[in-house]
Length: 170
Ligand SMILES: [Zn+2]
Image (cartoon, rainbow, N blue to C red):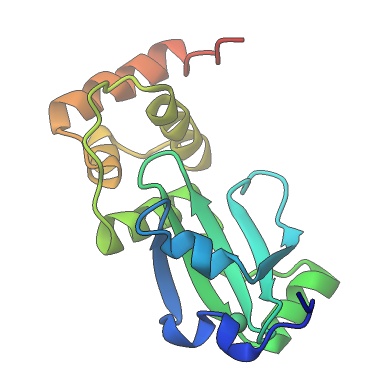
């Protein structure tokens, strides 16, 4: 196996500039990420955000890995100058900087799952993050972002607001 792959080994050209890749669906994620090397994590609060570069065609992608609600990767195609700005100066495009932005993208471009447990840990932590970033966010807005019924969203919202998100079991 040669370490240099031909350019037709990647899927970059087949993707839109803003791509939604479901996790584990039809192995599309495996095929897309087979050539993407993770260059830089944003770090800090946006734990979901990183920069990748394709080892086959050198295309840069900004990736938001949303694994709490929608189970999607959101990929934004970046030009070389923007990628250099991230690597050299830590200047990130604003698209995926808050979890609310990422979930809004999920809501508009993907399909919310059905949660059988409205108090699932992933939902509690998400509500906690959303409220931390924007304390005025409402239960209705959370219902929309998470694809929950208004009733479930209100229960979840007040549970987290009054008691905080559950601690992870260890
Ligand atoms: Zn590529």
